[in-house]
Length: 148
Image 1 (cartoon, helix red, strand yellow):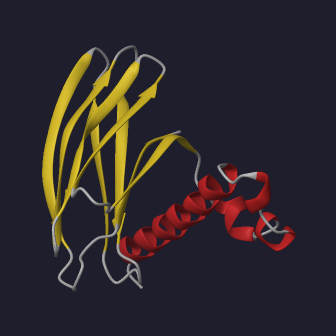
Image 2: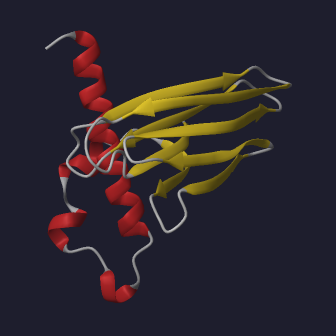
């Protein structure tokens, strides 16, 4: 496996583990994690993430996101199509450089992307990009977060 493929596989595993942690953390008492879920080794290997938002396909194909990290912010939209998506918005860094990361995937993980956008301290960087998933239904979710 190439170094690039190995790195992407590791980030994908981390993304899925973080999604499991986020889902478990938001569970109501009736939905609490089982002991097996709580002890899952994937949670221990999940990369640190600050202020995660998971955007999923819903009734509306355009979903907004807004995440803050101290005084820094990223805000924008994810628009889902049948076999692709578009992401647009901005990241504003106040006192330090800030990177926002986007990880998109479909239900069976046959499609995956990992993109970052960075703004230097005291600047705002706009972004707009598209990704393609050439299978029926396309992408089902995008995680947006500030890596720690």
